[in-house]
Amino acid sequence: MTLEGVLFDAIIAAKKVVVNNLDQAAEKTGFENPFGDKTLLLDQEAENAAIEVLQTSGYQMKIVTEEQGIINSEGKTEYLVIIDPIDGSANLERNIPLCTIGISASSFKPNLTTDEIEISIVDSYFTKETYVARKGQGVTCNGKPVSVAQPIPIEEAIISYDSKKKGDSYFSSASQRIVDGVKDVRRTASNLLDLCWVAAGKLDAMVDLRDMLPIIHVSGTHMVSEAGGYILGEGGDRFVMSLDSQYMMNFIAASDESLAQSIHRLYVSK
Image (cartoon, rainbow, N blue to C red; front, side, top):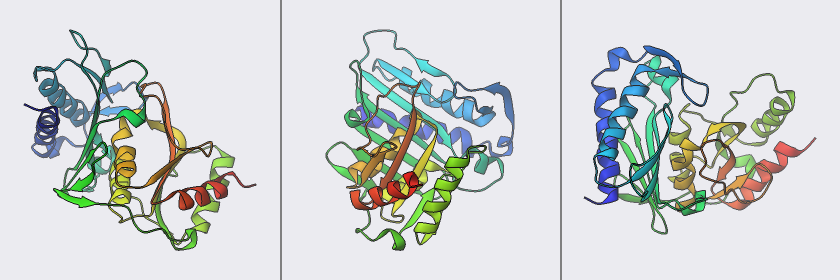
């Protein structure tokens, strides 16, 4: 089986656990994951199901997960695989049908970066959307090619903005400047889904500058870049970072560089 086929099988296994056990959606394990979040039972079980598929695939994989951290391969590592089993756990707890599973993979070598991801898949559990990004080949949704929206001025842009950060007055004021500067804001509370919607041209940008988003969400930024968008880092340069689980992602993922820079200028202005 191809690597892509294995990744799809891992997603199918995780989805089966979730959709067949929705009555357990609010149950917690009593533990925290390596990123400090309380672990839902379904998060853990969906991740375990995906990992089992990956580890029995015949490929030697180093796996970076949300709940278990790093799982090293038993032999010589062939691939790095990064999994987020349920992005939008709070939605799932509240029976809001907006959550996703994301997975990315790259041939393994030391010091991999986001530029070297070869394939990403994001599947929306309940909205019947499956996005696939292949390096240098664009993005598809349910098998049909998609691309980012046409460039527009910032005052006409509809964006997703993750504002879930408390106790930071600078972030609060910067966030307000951005909200005031765009046409409107939409947010699903699944950052992967919002990023896919940027890739598909439904949103003009998705912004997360909280320094709180783990690298396991990299499948979403990969979608935007492969769909023709532009991703800006917090410092104002093109977004590229190490695929190291200790780092948090900060980015402005937009339909084009001009919009990304316009949003960044609002963020940094005093």
